[in-house]
Length: 305
Length: 278
Image (cartoon, rainbow over all chains, first blue to last red; front, side, top):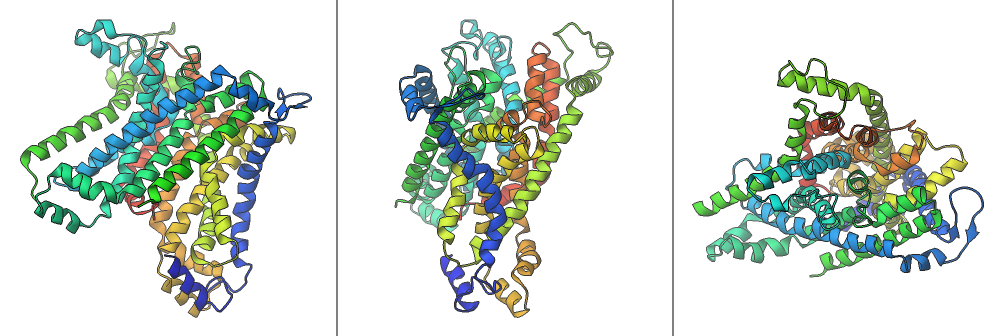
């Protein structure tokens, strides 16, 4: 890949960026408009976020410089610690479980012999397409005291298990977690299918000649080949778990109590409900650092061989 | 390539179970639209004696008018078209520079754009709101679309770079022989040759923008630029007891994207399977 770019550069003359770019400035001119928008609406606000996080400010009137005070407060803040803990639980439901299920589904579809591949692929991906606010409406109806889930439980005589799933501290977080699993299976499956499609058929034929069954074939051929896709899937789903804002806002508002609050919901709540902009920005910066760190770690694992 | 009959059966069972799981919540909402209204005081005219379809149509019409969704869908469309149009042009340009040109600082600049894939909206939306409020620019198209363009450009740069890198270098060399400028080469040769990748990117950006919630929620506090998902969240607060109306509103919001997806799904899924991870 990089060699292709290299030859292009050489053929365009010794110092020219490409065969058709005749000025050394050309590539920068192509980047300039995007850099301006990206800088103004992403990079600059991120820097401002870090700056705001050093102040005590209600959003109106004077602000007071407090250094790392907001971060120190977070370290001792039980609500913030709950939010981080909840995010970790959601990662299991958004990333780990969909990965395991997605691997099985993609492996089945890759092995072929299944008619209606396109149908299954489309239907299982469908949840990804629907706005999270709509997803929230659908699942609230599913979990409601007289909703689908409780109706089914009553129907099979498990009346003792029925409850308001999103309203009870013991079940609300797990109930939201399952929405995440439902959401992410399709995305993970599609990414893994993309990786598995690149495995040459000969590898499978060789494994089958050796008498490998579906399970051994999966561990010997399929799994090692989709390492990079597993890493991509994990990065995307872990970030989705950490960014669960719409769903929480629409289903539980972080409650009951603080049992379902997450860092991204805390950013919003602190800035606009508690009028503590400095603390909101401190949470935002911590969240960004966590996202960066997870990306770096997972990409490293994906690259290693 | 023989596979035992038992395995094939098991495969169908597993796939069917997950297809049913994926569809159940969606179909439940759809079915709710066609039920008689139960909650609330306002008796629904005509629904009592009409058939199932009449009930459904009545619920959709009632949700449409009482939620004012016509206006919000138009706002959503405007925001989506602006974000898609601008970010597409910008990322085709950046993808072209990063994918086909050699220049000083290209790696560092590319990583700077990649960073944008990791910056959560939560981290930029708060200072952006207060800074734009100081400038009197909240509740504008700029405030709602700007941050979404920035996020889409980060992804689009990554995506289009991969597309253009995969092009045979002879394409550009031939254009150079014909004396084409770098701009002509891009618009006349490379863009037509990467229609599939651009189409997939368009579907993704349209979907993300249509479904975005936090940015319009924060950036338009008076609701002047209220997009459809926000309107649904407000509708939910007002019609908690009217399950059927809420379901109808949810269907109205979800339908445009679902239609786009189903029409373009072959194209889109093929693009996803071939694109991106290169």
